[in-house]
Image (cartoon, rainbow, N blue to C red; front, side, top):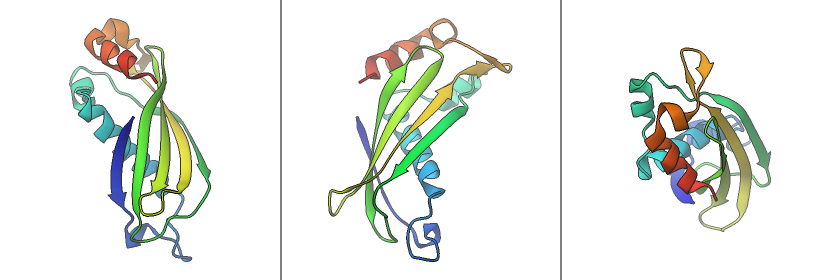
Length: 135
């Protein structure tokens, strides 16, 4: 598990002063990139090899609101990986209170030239790294 910390910004709030729900997907993306880079997996390297990793699903469950100025710890971990689909799990926690505010998942696949590819065949060293991260 990797913890990504960020501070909620004013422009991310809605009219009620609560972080707008659409920002959680952006935060998941930030946390995903920081996490993968921290373990030596580079989406830039995938791009250079012609492999892209689009999001194929996002799920979120909102439990408690976050507000402007709150520091948020986003725990991210690999929930599942089968060579072609990577599922990450996220837990958003208010750093000051320790309360879990939101949970979620993203699923990515890997494609080259518009076709799904197996990283085991296309990028074996990355496949090994991802398999080692499954919790």
